[in-house]
Length: 305
Image 1 (cartoon, rainbow, N blue to C red):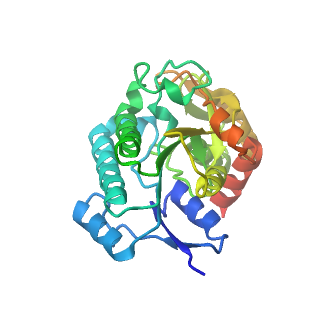
Image 2: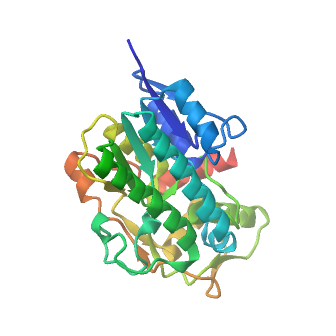
């Protein structure tokens, strides 16, 4: 039996590793991956050569330069160049080599800072972006618009998924460059080990966020692989939100930190509230599985081990 060849970019990252793990459970697929030193996605000729030699049926573009607010605002040129260049190479090669389906992974940060909540796919380019991660967002908007225009002009079977804030077991736990959940797990764990009396959390704690366990995103991709989809953009989220203050308390509880939590308002909160509208995906029959407490507990156990 022929197994569809699925090329997953960024297979070592949070999203890519989860996609590979979930899809490998299905014996209908043959998963193609490449280490960064074997395939530079920033190099157009290398990407063309890979497509020409390996002839994937489906491409899932999950590679990208990612990081938290501080990392985004410190290295904006790297974020916009690397994410844009990878998308240009992958999307154009997917068209040139007649890929049957491309699933491009975007981010909910593409939406305006003060977008109406919950955020519908139609709100794209409806207002000003959050400045702290604008470079990353613009690169992701470029990739999304590329999939949309290739679909419009060439009838390519390309879609872009916009996941909400993700977390998982293969995350970046660096306090400066990591996203909020892994960074806080690291902070609270270190504070617990050192018997610290308090932990500083950046921002006021008032910002509201929605989080999705990365395996749920991977399952949504598996769900969509063989479906005919008319939409250009599809949001993927849990539909549940929490303040950073309450998230901090939850993580402290899971880790077992008993001290005080201090919020440093000198650091930006980013977008005040962000929750995506998942009506399109729900109507197709998909629903997330992992509750926040369960997911964070899994991540903490993985972090400790």
